[in-house]
Length: 423
Image 1 (tube, helix red, strand yellow):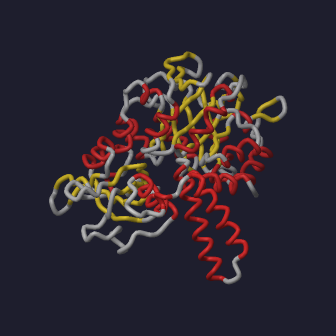
Image 2 (tube, rainbow, N blue to C red; image 1 turned 90 degrees about the horizontal axis):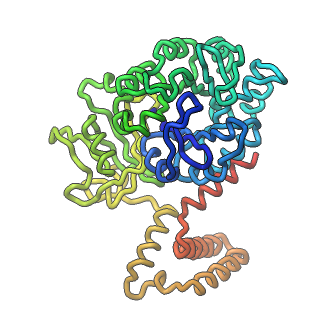
Image 3 (cartoon, helix red, strand yellow; image 1 turned 45 degrees about the vertical axis):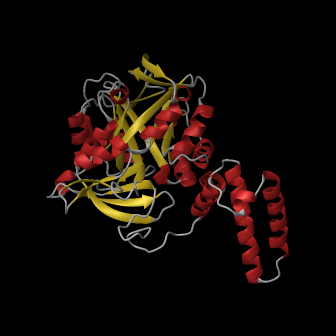
């Protein structure tokens, strides 16, 4: 997996050389998050919090709803970690607090145990930032005396993933420390993401072949590496003799639509045009899904599996996926979901057919109907009556959501946030 980094300082997206010298600064964190999310998880790092001089929490919160984010910078308690997860973060990254005990430095096993127990080992990433094989903390300003490789082995008990940054290389665009990466990969069996100095596609390919994920910052922002190209070279094309990897197309509400195959050219075309493109084995050429039928599939995000030899494309389909006219290649009908119901309501509200009940719902009327239906749900006497009235309540509530330009997914995200926050 290739992970794009969004480092935030003073509410701006920045890149620093050696963690100190400002190399670039820009606005538009939400725009970047939407773009980066197509290719993989995003590392969102609060540099001010990491250095103990403020917080960019309010800027980070909306990014967690836009993209799949792992968040780090100044996280020093399980309470902070739980709050970030409840807001939508997939994982949290901890650093300095892991290596500080009292006034000195050692592995803080009490802190690690609490974090692992409270949020789950699989959601905890420990940042092992190192200079000359020694772990450094406090924004890389403080030496701990802890040796990288020995300490990393002990961390596996508590964390499902390590993030290794070679501080000497960070921001310098002079190449990654491949030797250190190989040694660390050999020392630990957990998931490993590496950063620092990566500046060529050859390095991305080499690091991926070692079984590591790659975090990119300066190389992306300076245009030295294109994220689509990095995603493509990080895949394990060597496993397939014909140069084709399987792709599963899945709708945004989770329904599997179809399978196909991609080569590098088709994959890059998908990212370029924003619609799912395959390599047709029968035609022996690139095939844009929907090029004749119009039933295209807009790409929302692409993800590789754990072995990097199969892809999942989450898409927004414009029509049936199957050449037979069925919604999917595995079922005849589209699954009736709340998202699908809202699509129908949105269409009726936008293009009102004659006699449409949905189109007749004014703001006042739909609110009145919700109150009526809620009462009827609460006073229903039989099971069938309860189902009938609940369906009416769902329908009118979603109609009001559509009128207020609120999506079902936003409501489900909020429910998930509450679930994550509550034990």
